[in-house]
Length: 403
Image (tube, rainbow, N blue to C red; front, side):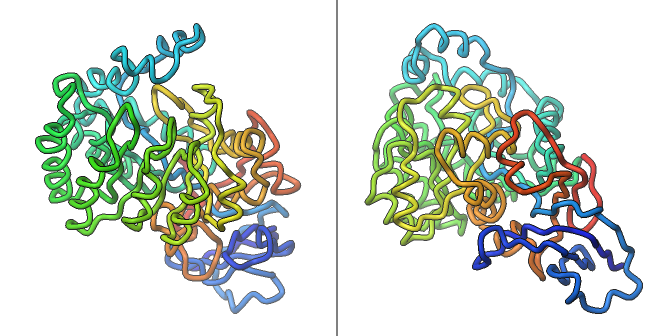
């Protein structure tokens, strides 16, 4: 069946288009979940027999994409939030046994179904703001069985909701208490064999790691990336968040989809990432929540021509954020990104950061009809407003979609 959306104002976000790719009097023709045509209504091809919906002059963007989340986990870390308010730093909390490791016990205690139950409300919050695609990482189990359960939960959540989920194996997120001081043993006995097992089970779309002084060195992450390459899996990396540790350069050498955080990235890192096609995924929620003193070098990324995406980094300890609309506002106000950069960052560039740009992220013929319809007067409102959700409708693979 064909579906036709008329009386629409489009922000196509198409690559190579001017600015946001605006079409004031637009139409979208859909068939089989794919966009057949998107552009001026005056140029609409034959749409005989199409089911027609008048959007009332509303704006349509690609459905939003959250390309970096730790959405599946047990428990919360509100107590650490209190400690931070009292002056403790992220590194101090982590070295005292808090941080990532403090979420492990709560996550390990939950079954797959229980993980789904506690995580779905976070996914629903994203969907309610027009999100169609979400990346979900493991990384709070830190043993093979628990890491696999996290990704099994992510796969199950995709079947429970009208959403596309991409999974990332992030066992190299932290060293659990039972391996403290033995990070190499943890990689040899958990992170790497677990990756092979999870990949064999079809649970892994990409491989991630945390390259930082409180986590794993670039040399250690390289071992994990080498195995990912042997399995034909793309990589991405938490890099240069708290210090400059060589993660961005490592990501570039492995042709990573993205390097994420990047507060301490340098000009050479930006150039290497651009040459490798790696997206800089910026995470203003974490920067804001842990009150980091240094923001990512947006000007260096612009100068190098590095693609920039934005994501929530939804996680229990450093970014308990489930709003891409607020993320865009933070990107603008905290990182001085433009409206165009923010909107591209949660659509086209987020899709690029997941290796999914051929499927979604722009409103163009041939792509999945993943659309968000907004009751706004201009696209800048999506970045400008705080605590306001103007979503009118969401389409996923061409069909009207509710959570």
